[in-house]
Image (cartoon, rainbow, N blue to C red; front, side, top):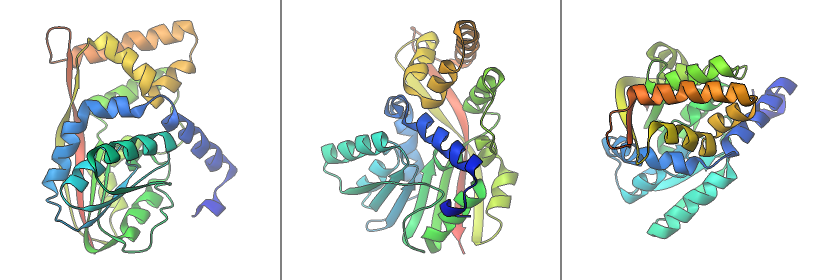
Length: 273
């Protein structure tokens, strides 16, 4: 199914999702785990001159370290505001990276255009996972690598999504955290893949302020949390805030009014057939 075949319901859903991801300022959230993003890229052992596509790149958490490693990097995201931040960051470092506004479900690149296709906590949120899987495979050359980092259902962020869903019904689409389930990934990559490895890893969120302030930080800057609060009345917002503060406090491993939380994700490394 391409965009010309979208149902009215899917067009409405994609418009709503675009509003979610352009709300707030995701760059403020991405900063909190940029070290883990760099570690993800380092494990891929990218070589100088490799053509790399960062799908749903956000503000460039993967694109920047990939370019530093010598790769020829293209980043794509639906959110113009995040692309602008990514371009500014690349310019500040003197890195040549092509950043495009585009949809993970309909990439504007030719077949087999890239040696590696990467995505961290990005493509997993597109509403049609089978379409995303097909696009990731299409643009990756034979023998190339598709690398994903996806939140797991049982990890901290998966729990945060589940908790929020108790207050605000999630959109009518497959749960994004199914991309963090090994069985679902194997089903989505059952064809066109020569080798598939999945590893559960943890990434660390670090903030210099308290869990209660982290919740407000997410409410201000993280589109899904911001939109969830906006959809509730005052009492509903108070209940959601209370539950989120309780969750962050329970998992906090920092002292001195700071916040440090580990969240599990599934690292997916697929070799294109």
